[in-house]
Every structure is written in C-alpha cells, then in structure tokens.
Figure 1 (tube, each protein chain N blue to C red):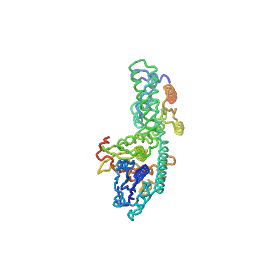
Figure 2 (figure 1 turned 90 degrees about the horizontal axis):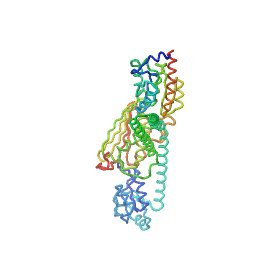
Figure 3 (figure 1 turned 120 degrees about the vertical axis):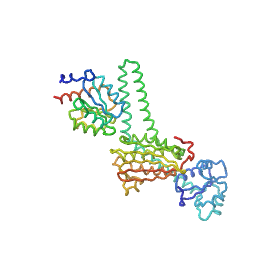
Figure 4 (figure 1 turned 60 degrees about the horizontal axis):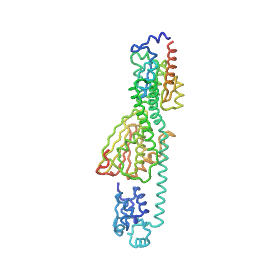
Amino acid sequence: MSDFKSGFFVGGEACNGRVLVVDDEPDIRKVVKMTLQKAGYDVLEAENGEKAIETINSGENRLMLDVMICDIRMPKVNGVEAIAYFRSNYPHVPLIVLTGFPDTDMATSFLRQGVVDYLVKPVEGEKLRSAVARAMEQRELARL
Amino acid sequence: MESSDHTKVAILGAGHGGRALLDLLHQIPSIKIVGIADRDPEAPGLQRARELRIPVATDVPDLISNHGVSLIMDVTGDPAMETYLHAHKPPTADILSGSASRLLWELIQHESKLEAELLQAEKLAGIGSFAAGIAHDINNPLQLILGLAESLAEERNLSAVHEQARDIIEAVKRTSAICRDLTRYSRRASPHEDVLVCVNGKLDEALKIARYASSFHDIEMIKRYQPGAAVKGNPDELLHVLVNLITNAVHAMEHVGGTLTVETHVLDGLVDVRISDTGCGIAQDKIHEIFEPFFTTKAPGKGTGLGLYNVKTIVNKMHGTIAVASEIDKGSTFTLTFPNAEPTGQGCLS
C-alpha cells in the first residue's frame, strides 16, 4: 500500500494524496488549500458541482483523485446533486461534506449515502486534516 | 390615480386633532382631502397640510360650498361653528363633529396599530427562513478567520503575517455588516414616518436582504434604474414591500434558475417599480386571489399567506397601485406605480 503512494509525485515533491475542494467561496478554497498543503496534500479547486464533475473527469484525475471535500449551497450543480453523481460514478473516492449550514436530516442522508464526514464551518485545521487522513485510509482500502 | 368615487373631505380645525385626522385620512386612497382650515395660520395641522401638498383654505364658506365636499369634519370644538355648518352646508354634504370625529379617529388609529402588528408578525415569520442564508454568510467568513488565525500562529514571515491580519479584519467587517443589515430590517417600522425615499437605493438594500431568504445561485440579475425615482412613504415599509416581491420572484425560479429583472422608470409624474422573474408563473384562475390574506401556494411552514396582502396594503397607503402580469412557466412581473415625490429628481440621484 505504502509502496503505491510513494510512487506518486507532484511538482517533484512527495505527496500524501490529491484532494479536490469544491466550494463557491474563493476564501474557503484558499484556507482549506492552505491548511491541507501544510499537511503535504496536493489540493485542486472547483467553484461548483459542475466544475468538480469536469475536474474529476479530466486527465489523470479520474485515477489520481483521492478525496473530495464538498460544500452544499453552490450555484450550477449544487452539493446534493454533485454528491449523488460522485457516489454513483466514483464510489471509491471518499467524500467529506463541509457546509456552513448544519442540517441534521441532510447529514443523516449523506452519511447513509456513504459520505465519510459531515463537517460544519468553521472547522479547525486539525479536525479537517484528521478527517482527510481518515478518508485517505478509506481510499487506500478501496485500492486493495 | 384620482377618481370621482373619492369621498371628498373638508377638515375644519387644524390643531392636534385636525393634524392627526389629516395624517390618517391622507393615507386612505379612497379619501380626497379638498382642504383644511383654521383661524390660526400657524396651527400644526396647516403646517402638515403644506408638507403633504393639501390645500390650506382661509375661507370656510368657500371650502364647504365650492369643492364638491361630501363630508365636513369639524374638530374645532366651537359650538358657533357647529351652528354655522348646520345652517350653511350644501345639502349633499354630511357633517361629522365633536365626539363622532374623535371616535372615528380612535377607530382608524386602532386599525393602523393592528396593521402595524400584522406587518411586523409577517416580517418576523419571514426572517425565520433566513437561517440558512445567515448561517452560510457568517460561517464562511468565520472559516476564513479561523484558518488564517491558525496559520498566523505558525507564520514566521512578517509580510505574510500582515497580509493575513488584513484579510481577517476584512472578514470580520463583512460579518458584522450582516448583523447590521438584519437588525435594521427586523426592527418595527416607525409609525407615520412619511419621508422622501429613493427607490433605487431601497431596491439595492432589498436585494441584499432577499439573499438571506433565498439562494440567488443560478439567477442572472438585471438592474435598470432610472435616476430620480423618489416616492413619499415610510422607508421601512417600502423596504419590506421590495424584499417580499424580490423573494417571491427568486422562489418562483427555485431549482431551475432564471433571470431576475428589477427596474425603475420615472415618467409623467409617476414612478414605476418593476420586478420580473422568468419562473413558474401564476395560474390565471389564481391571479385575483394572490393579494387575499392567507392565500399561499407555498408548502406549510414556508409562507404565511400574508406577504402580498401586506404589500398591497402598504402600496395603497403610499397612494400607489400594484399590478401583476403572469404566464405559467414564463414568469411574472409585478409593477408598482407611485406618484413621483420629487418631479425634478434633485434629491434623489442614486
């Protein structure tokens, strides 16, 4: 397992995995990226569900994307629609929901759909990194 | 906006009672005040009449005989006036004097108090639906602030520290603006505060508030403002009207998206405010019901059914009219028409 990961390089640096952050707020993408890059992750960004679907379907991302972090309230394809798409087309990519509006019913429904974590903004860097680390473990298991 | 079925009223006596009557009757579109008279040229009611551009009469016999008056309201409290009126009033005019005038004034005031209560209740019920929008708009900057602060704690580079601190300050300012907008909107409309209101500025304010009530995602917005659109009225109540109409327009396009157009036109002494959507539309057999109290097409718990009823009440109070054109699956246009309070547009160039 670790052998597989060690073969993955981005920009000449060793990488702990590739994460796609989907959020319509550039500020959120900026801090999430900053927080995860410090933990050695390679971070891609998408501003809505439509862009996220485009990103995951382009080039090597189809294979190399490890974890997705997705907002709910977004233009174009919103989080609910995007998550349904990813769960059915990319069931091996673990999903983390990061939302500004906690909703118990929605959280339950997402967790039932196999979403790994349901985080509510503002979330501490440590909590976010450990959620991503857990999701990465799931991703590794899916590769076996 | 004038018609022959107006009740034409003359008010005699412009003390505090006369002034209060003037304020209340002035708000009722079916009543036209043809003039107010008082012996004292400095009486408070006469000052108010000049502000409202209501004729101030100096000659009582002329006022009661020559203007097609159908109702004379005597609040002078002077028995000689009562005797004079009974002897000289035109046969078609009724007289309301003394305690009857006071009773009417009390009834109208009671009703306007109830109306204000209803308005506030409906507004507060609406604010309940802002929760998702408020949470979104507060938690996003909080996420930025938290992320930046965590990063600052480890940052060694001084210029990066300065930049991140600046970003935090900006995010805090954005967040506090949300609370300011909402507390301003949620407060009770101050009673009888008729002032000059710039419609274009109010529309922008309403668009900001309406974003909390409904998601503007996937909605293209077109603004066409004509400068100088000014109306007389209560600014808090006009804001409430505009928030209501914009929120309805956005709800009509929920899930499918569309175009929201907000326009103002100033023409021939009138101000038109038009709010259009390209949403689901209103069925022709329902269109006459939409201004009725408790009519709603929204799911239980989503609408009070009082929104458009209150909108119409406020618009009428401002001597305006409301019209709607709608087609199923094409969209709706609500047009408000008010007398232009500032024909030259000098005070209102927003």
